[in-house]
Structure formats: structure tokens, C-alpha cells
Length: 296
Image (tube, rainbow, N blue to C red; front, side):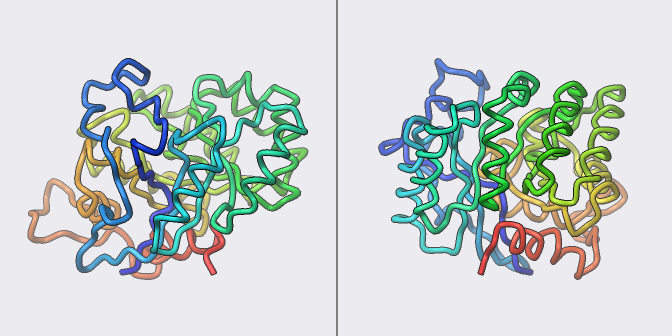
């Protein structure tokens, strides 16, 4: 089965900054040291029945002041087909934003940008510069990767205002919008998920469950994925690894088997059942990413 991994990160600690990987800087994960090393495309190993045929590299803090340096490094070192999402601060005034964006667009792998919102989502999305710059992305048919908790209803309200006046903005929700095991928060997450699904150019990627819970269960992940599919339709949902952070939970092969195989408590390890039929798996693991990220 062909895989395009639409959300992963590669590191070269000698060439890039990666300040977030240093122990003295946030996030303060006790096991951060396990991923604070170099990772290249040669670490993305899958075996039968899975075949990696491409990936989407998401900015990883290589150089936030000169984000094109990360893209130049990727394009000089990667041989596999890939697309890249660059870091770019959407709160910048228009001219500095355009200068950086135009530099990034000179690289053939660039299809969009990410600027992490998370707990600052409401403030950033309410910023006039952010709203204007997202409109520029829409005009240039570039993707904005959205990382924020969908249980933050005020931030989602602000996002919906942006989407209402910029309906052509291609937006991809990262990490399923940070679902939670708190029942009250999860109900809000699901409600806001459904609100955002009404915008046809909004897609969602399911990954990153290990960030909140290193030992998350396959059953819980499967429930989240199915809620995303029910809300967005299977043609706007993508499964992803979040490599190398996924290594906190499982290796790369196991992560993708977990994405594609549903293993319930009634099944043994020797008798897994596919969670989806062949056509659905192709959409979730290959064709949706191929289309959205403009693989030729």
C-alpha cells in the first residue's frame, strides 16, 4: 500500500537552530532528548505491506528568522518526492511578509506555510496583519497549516470570521485540532470540528496523539479519526506520522500500522483487521495528500 506521509519533520542539528529541542527551552518534555538528534529521509523506513512514496515536511524551527534556509537544506539533501511547508510569521506587516513569502516561493517544494498558534490562537487570528496575510496566501493558492486547539471556541470563532471573508484559503488542521480525553472539552472539540468542516477548502490531518499521551490507545485514536471522517468526509482527512515525535509512542512502521490497522482488545497480534476498505485506505494514506499538497 502506497503512503504519502503528510506531516513529518527532519533535523540537522549542526545546520539548523531548533531551539525548542534544547533542554533549557520549552516545551519541557522529560523525554525530549530521545528526538534531539539528526533525522533524514533514510530514517523513514517502511516494510511490506507499506511503501513510502513521498512526504510533506513541516517546518521544524530550523531558522525562524530566515525560514528559506530550511527549504534550501531539504531540497539539497532529499531524494524522495516531497513537498515542504515553511515557517512564516503571519503577524508580520504586509511588506516584510511578502518579502519572505516571495523568497520561499522560489523553492519548488514549497506549497504553504505554518505559524504555530496553539494557546495564542485568539490573539494571532484577531490581528489585522494575520488576517491580511492569510488573504495573501489564498490569492497565491498556498496552504496554511493550522495548529491550535479546537476546544478553544473563541479562537475558532475568530478563525471562522477569517474563513468567511477568505473562503478560498486552503487550510489544513494539524494534529486533529488537539482532541482531548476530557469529555466536556472533547464535546466542544467535536462541535467546532463540525463547524470548520462546513468550509470546503479546510482539510484535517490525524497525527500527534503521542504529544499529549505517550501511551494513547489504538481504540481512542480510531475514535478520533472516525469523528474526523464523519465531520469532513473521507476525501478531506489525511493520516500522518508526526515523525520523529511519534517515536515517543512507537517506531515509524508501527505508527503507520497503527494508522491503517484497527487492533481491538478482542484481536491477537497475529490477526489484525483493516480498519478501512482498500479505497478508503488509499484516500486516507495517499490520494488525499497527493491532491492537497500538489504532488505531480
